[in-house]
Amino acid sequence: MPTVSMTVNGKPTTAEAEGRTLLVEFLRGPLGLTGTHVGCDTSQCGACVVHVNGEAVKACTMFAAEAEGADVQTIEGMANADGSLGVIQQAFQDHHGLQCGFCTPGMVMSAAALLKENPKPTETEIRDYLEGNICRCTGYHNIVKAIMAASGQDVTAIAAE
Amino acid sequence: MYDFELVKPTTVEEAVAALSGDEAQPLGGGQTLIPTMKQRLAMPGTLVSTSGIASMKGVSASGGVLTVGGATTHGTVAAEAASSYPALAALAGGIGDPAVRNRGTVGGSLANNDPAACYPAGLLGSGGVVVTNTREIAADDFFQGMFTTALEEGELITAVKFNIPEKAAYAKFAQPASRFPLTAAFVAKTSDGVRVAITGASEEGVFRWTEAEEALSSNFSADAVDGLSVDADGMIGDIHGTPAYRAHLVKVMTKRAVTAAG
Image 1: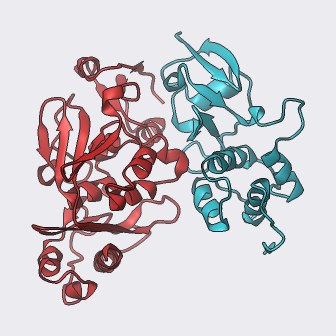
Image 2 (image 1 turned 30 degrees about the vertical axis):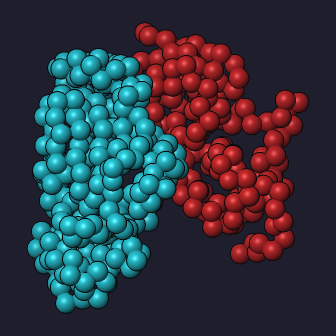
């Protein structure tokens, strides 16, 4: 079987992959990085969002071999170096931005991509950006609130409707 | 999904050579093709990825024409065409969601010619040409019905040239789950007249609404289409909307696009 090499969360990695091996299968299988979830497997739900060369993509709808040589970041790479939660992760905890937690890896990765291109998004911009991330528990309010808080904005005015 | 061989050429010549193989097919961003393959509705023997072909990427504007490399993602078009052709940039920036836009390509969307895709309306509405490895195909000749185009076997979209109009806008009534247009209208006003392209509505795929074009060419205002009616015959009917509903949306979205174009 051919091998695929990429840098995942800063570490160079190489593993076997068929042409049809999806990036998410590559991450969860040989690399054992099961933080990236498979929800719908049809590129609707966004639970599998990771960053490839800094851009958010749905890892269930990209072949691993397409990420050959790429710099990939997953939810496992979002914590601080000392193992404590990163700013976005901490905000999700502080503002109850999750209930069952299944969508959370994708939500955090999408949020990180948003804040990189738009450091102080409005509530509407956050909701627009999360178009491709589905949560069945929270009703999104606390996710939006967590992302606003992570961007350093005051969230006291945002009602928990 | 069925197994296949994935090839990653770095030049158009290598890609075309790989596409001459049996059951070979180009792979753009795969945002439609990969889900289709998972359902085993497509089973290519070889997929020829365009993502590593540098000459097929990028956005440039000159002489009233916006040229977009065939492997350019929607996200790149949304960002890089924003100043030269804002209506098209807005169309690209409204496709799917951010992660889909970071992978999906203009060439892939046009080659697939989904009857509810956004880009076919953008190209047919703008006028322009599809550039392949062998020829240039006029926008008016390219779309040949649902999921059907003028492309030959093994032909690859290397670039797409959009005519930049005086003003234009795209108005999409999005199906909220898929984010594809239930019906959308792209309206472009040029010195030669007005073009109106409708997607999501017809069983034949994207089409030009010529009655509206004539009406708008003499009076570019939303009122100009008030007196027109759209035949529900041949419109798509599904759980999201009847043919009559879509026929109605054709007019509503055209009016919204005209108003947005200003």
